[in-house]
Image (cartoon, rainbow, N blue to C red):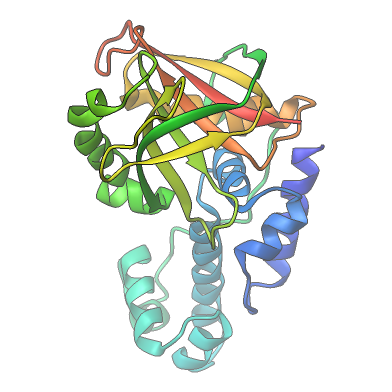
Length: 283
C-alpha cells in the first residue's frame, strides 16, 4: 500500500470539496484504512488532525473571500459548511484573533493554513528513528475496564489517564492475570473517531470477572512491535514517527484490528530509563 499516494489523493479530494460536506467515512474509505488508523496516519503525516485540517482550510479560504469579495459574511459561512453566522464568527475569531468584519474592514493579514504538502523525509520528525520487531501473537484474552473515547477527548479531558487511575488500584482483583498491563484500542464498529480503550491485564483463564470490568478475546495477528524509551510525555513523538514516517515508507499494510501498548517490568512512567512496547496489527 502506498500511503503517500493515498494521503495525497485524500488531500486533493478535501481541497476540491471544501464547500461541501466531507465525512470521515468517505475519506478513510478513499485511503483504504479504518477510520481510527486513517486519523492517526493523517495527523502524523500532515501535523493536524483530519477535522482540524479541514476546518483551518475552510477558514483560510473564507478569509480570502472576505478580503477579495463583497459577499455577505453569512453567505461565506454557509459556503464553507458552518452551521450558522455565529458559529463561523466564533471559529474565525478563535483562529485568527479578529472577527470576519474586522478582517474585511481592516484588510487584516491572516496566519493561513496552506494546502498540506507531504514530504517523504519529514523534517518535523528530525533524526528520530526506531526499528520494530515483527511478531505473531496467538489469540489471547484480557480482563479490565473499558471506555469509549476519541483522541481529541483524551487530549482535552484525559479520559485514558483517568481510566488507569480507576483501574490500577483494582488490578489485583483479576484472577489468573499475567504480570504487567495492556492499553488496548479497538476501533472497528465505532462511528467517527470513536474507539474502545481498555486498561487491562492478559489472563490465562477467565474464572470470574470483577464488578465493573469486562473480558475480551483478541484474535491471533501479526504485529509490528515498536519499543518506546523514556517518559510517556514523549510518547506522541514515537507515534508520529510510526504513523508519519516508518509505516508510510515501509511495505506493511495496517489491519483494522486491535492495537495495544504493553507495560511490563521495564515500564517506569516518568523515568528516562522506562520502556514500553507498541503493537500495530499488520497483514
